[in-house]
Each structure stands twice: as structure tokens, then as C-alpha cells.
Amino acid sequence: MSRNGPDDATRKGTEEAAEIEGLLALAATTRPQRGGAALEVMSEAIAKCRVLARTSPGEYDALLARCLRDTATMLLDRRRAVEALTLAQEAVALARAAGGVPLMRALRCLAAALGALNRFSEAAVTEAEAETLARPPD
Image (tube, rainbow, N blue to C red; front, top):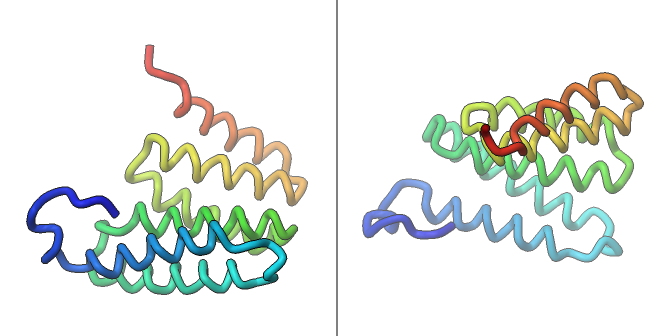
């Protein structure tokens, strides 16, 4: 987590958010051959982020959405689309407040989960929404 100002060191949750960012980085570099190790790390990141989100409503929604989206992507890579769908749906719900790139990424993850479940028309609608966010405004 980058520092935004001199008071960041004393801002509530800063150390915890940095720890969650570290867990995300660790999971991203864990070799697929290690089985469920990366998913265990991501589960820990989600749990820690949920605690932060409860203590400071709205402040950590983007980080929680990222944890959920990254975990959903890992589950999709492991052909566990049913589990991924739930996480991707929650990520989209959280990312809607932020809009922009976080929402676009969450929508693309959701579209992938829907496609993996053969729900192609829903996947197409979701991907189309993501595409509208990817285009620069006229």
C-alpha cells in the first residue's frame, strides 16, 4: 500500500492493509504445484480484509473486492467455477461504488465464472458492461 500522506502511519488499519497486500503478493507468486497453498493464503487475506471492512465501513471495500476477485480467478484456474461465481459476484457488488477499472476487472472475472458455468448469455451481458467501462469517454 502506498503512502498518501504523513498521517498514513497512524491511520487505523494501515498495517493490516499492508499485511493483506503482502498476502496477495505471496499468493500471486506461489507455484501452482504447491496445491492449495495459494488459496489458503487468499482465504487468510479475505478473512483479514473482512475484519478491516467491518471496522471501517467503505474504506476497505476496494481491497476486499480485489481479494475476492483474485481468489475467484484462482478458483477458475482450478476449475472450481461454482465457488468462484459467489466470490466474483461479491467483488462486483463491492466494486460498483468505485466504478472504473476495479469494476471492469470484477465484471470480467464474473463473466469468466459465468462462462465456465455455461451461462453464456449472462456472461455476454456482463462482459459487455465491462467493455463499456474499458472504452474512453467520447
